[in-house]
Amino acid sequence: MSGQSGMVEKRGAGLWLTHAGLIVGVLFIFFPIWLAFVASTVTQPEIARPPMPLLPGDQFFENYRKALLSGVNAPVATMLLNSLVMAMGIAVGKIVISILSAFAIVYFKFPGRKAFFWLIFLTLMLPVEVRIVPTYEVAAGFGMLNSYSGLIFPLIASATATFLFRQFFMTVPDELAEAARVDGARPMRFFRDILIPMSRTNIAALFVILFIYGWNQYLWPLLITTDPSMNTIVMGIKQMFPSGDDIADWPVIMATSILAMLPPILVVVSMQKLFIRGLVESEK
Amino acid sequence: MEKRVTFKGWFLPLLLVLPQAIVSAVFFFYPAGQAVWQSMFIPDPFGLKSQFVGLGNFEYLLGNSYYRASFVTTAIFSTLVTVVSMGVALYLALLADRLIKGSGTYRTLLIWPYAVAPAIAGVLWLFMFNTRVGVVAWYLGVLGYDWNHVLNGTEAMGLVVVASSWGRISYNFLFFLAGLQAIPKSVIEAAAIDGAHFWTRFRTIVWPLLSPTTFFLLVVNIVYAFFETFGVIHTITAGGPQQATTILVYKVFSDGFVGQDLGSSAAQSVILLIVVSALTIVQFKFVERRVHY
Image (cartoon, rainbow over all chains, first blue to last red; front, top):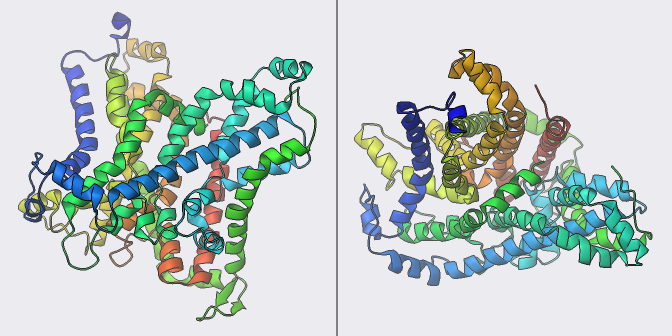
């Protein structure tokens, strides 16, 4: 194998240059996060008098304790909880309503099936960014401001997830449904005992992608939560900056930033295979 | 494509699609309809009555120099984000693809910034370039360069472009590496035996075979730059200075929520709607069919 690839594979100096190029790339990617981490372990005066140190200080526990328990407007622990509820709600909600409609579309012939399929397709063209004001008005009309349902429901229609499940169901052998029908199994029984177990990997891969999507939402929580105790962590960070000329509490803000990116990063790194699968599948 | 075997009945399937139908109707189609409707009215300052103006809001927008400037800003911003994030990603993917061992390790090291929200990326880059405490801004000062993205529009644009591209490199790298690894090594080796150097091989073999991936990423990244970078703009510049970084999505937000100019904001939403629809159609028509150049 190595002898065969030797033709285009660089050796010696070339190989080292390849590694060097990649390492520069990795460092470029890492540097902002390293700085944020360092800033979250030093004191405010150390940052206020530039240049700040480039190696971690000894204030790690102090800053993270302060962020988690008191924060600036609301304790970061509360915002983490809000983000968790929102991300789980969106991921689970999207998967449930999508798998149900995909099952209906693939395994039944019912009036309005085509029309329904096209309506789902059209939601692709309506990201929240283009219907900001009217969607806000609808949510406000339902009394959903500053609530979990307001954070979750307006975002859970999902064309991508529906298409993904539809495509997967199409590859499931017809014999399985045939056998279920001959055995007199009700459709929902077939769905629960055969389709769901077969879809496990797809569900997991999709969950990884949707969890990150939900966790990283910014604009929608910014509109829908005015009460600091309902802020999600990703949108709450901006609210931690003082509005006037006061200097920001950088150590606490940076500790919060690290806490905000940790859960989705852990999900990506620990479930890398599922993540890549989900990414590639959902973009097909 | 249709299933040969289906179950009978129409009540159950309707019940199954109901949740998705309700959510789509209430939170997607009704608001989108409202946006179209509102775009044809100008509410009075007290919000009591609206005056029908037909396409008046659109005429006003297209004649408005700020709105036209926002279009240009969006075009520059999206082009730069797309080129920078795809360029760096392709370069890294080409390097990683040359390795027999270790490309997996680099992949792990490079993909996780995908998980960092654009708004957080904005805060990280703002921290580095903050005019008061930013480390990079400080060292630039030592080198004799006075960095101030709060006052300088070009520097502000540069900063939001880099912050928006940074996390996006992971995503593009992943797809480029997969695309490169799908190219049969034998083809490239054959060219190498014929004496084609790296650059010639890249230009005549790799680049054409990579074109479906490149085109797909092009569309996806434009959509990203248009719509998902709101968090970066909002955290770093809030559209400033002097609207130098006010992209279209940011303008819909600031006119609608901050400026309370509902008619204009709705008209802007409708224009964006047309942009997304066009991009979605392009994506499905061409990307689905896999443009083998």
